[in-house]
Length: 303
Image 1: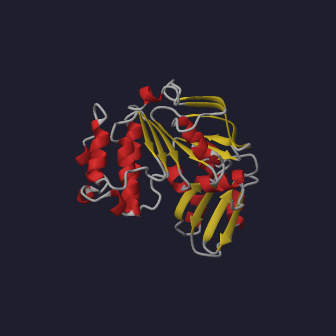
Image 2: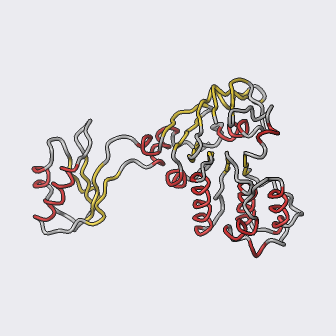
Image 3: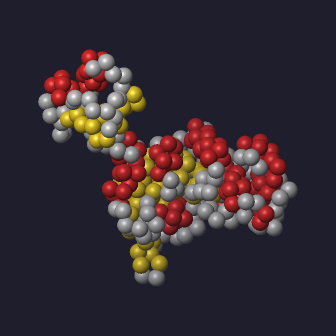
């Protein structure tokens, strides 16, 4: 899927301003951004729900508006509001959608996986918010889509259901689908996404793997008894490397500016701890989280 220089405006206000990005088969692409960033409008153009004012969108090489009939059986769409008929029973809805596809996932199998077996005869309006969310996801993936657009798939779900949805998303990816995931849950994007696109004010401000976006030098972090004398540790570390105790019992080793910590730093820290007769706990190499990167790119202002 390819988005090139996409522009979309409403009543003279540009909400997508030259956005360009792509989503590959066999990958999960997370589209992130604060409210009003233009991500929902961009995805709606990809789904064929809106026509771009300028630029070009192609899904599986086709125009999602002009070629909608050819794409319908190959694309799965999960809308944020579900878009489900409220008077129909849950099982009927899924069986109807499954019947439109040549090789659907068997509805009973999908209902069982998503914990909806006991609700097949329940009307959509009587389902809980989380149950409606899971049914909307089932409708989006029952046809084994080649491209799946999932808008906030775990919003309002409990931890158990969230894990089930994550497993389903990973399976879609492993089966070769291109999964385009829109979410405000940055830990979800960090766990699931092979690629992250960050939008702000209608433009793409970052695009890459979560680890690439985090970038920057990592730091070593460990816990031990409070108040260790770090002067000896500084002597065995590379010049410019800094060892501190930001809070009692929590220690951090930062590399010299413009450098990365290597195996020698890890060896020096563990050898020094052995000399001090302390066992370093939760010793790990840390990097900036996706949330930290997101806030740096888009700011902390509530919109």
